[in-house]
Image: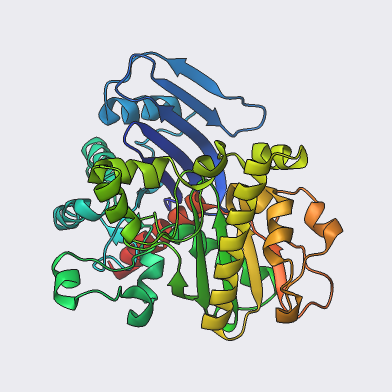
Length: 406
């Protein structure tokens, strides 16, 4: 029997998201989430996707990620999908930061774990949790291939001119300071899916991808390769986000430390958790912001305008970087669902061949679709992202290649 199933794990500091997929047809067999790990109020919601099956929920203390994964294994076994199944080909892990070392999905070894650990200083919130998930899964199934899929990998094709900050080279190299980018699995999946929507090969098209969720990033993709992205050393750079400022004059930090007496940690919290939309108007939910705008709320209107202005600026910049654009693609929670954001971001860009059809833009759908007028020079599309499927695909392809070499 050929093993075709892949379990995808996304380990956070106190959570564990998972999906089990069958790569024969990319179907989902089960999904779930364990949250509040380490607390007395831990919660596991498991959804087997067999016909007629509904979600199951359990609450109560789950001490750590080891206990969380064992609980997940029990739920999967209850549905005949246990981790001991010969149909399970591998476990794919989302890892946020791969630095310059990891440019593609990688089978986990002790050496790989050591290098991911070395990258903790540039991803202190994410890589430790990702490591915990990998180590837990390896202990549970030591003989099964474990594959790390890195958020930064898709962006490692950026030219040095895009990846370098204009600071002292020796200092930058000593401390690995450069632009890495994030949301790479989403940008990879969406740019490739957009090419298929156009009926063309990814190697033939230039695409601007706008991943707009609570975290937001843009990328310029030429012939299937990322040539520019908005996030940098950390996910703070770039677009206005739910709670992150995005681009800001670096001297703002020094000013706040000198004039407001804030510590480095306090400035960090300000820019990452008290800025962006929530800093501008107190809300980071675009639905609520639009409701307030429609009711005449000036702070919400300002937040929306700042958000759209930054977005439009990046679209123009990436159009210039690419030279020729075949499609602008919106994805993630805001990108897929907020029609006013899409129309406002492209308003006034008709001279670049960019426009949305009002009726098509207003349609709510879970399907990839075009929202530009017929005959537009540049296609505008909405493509729901699927990072779990992308991780599963990369994991399965790597394991298949390894098996073929044996």
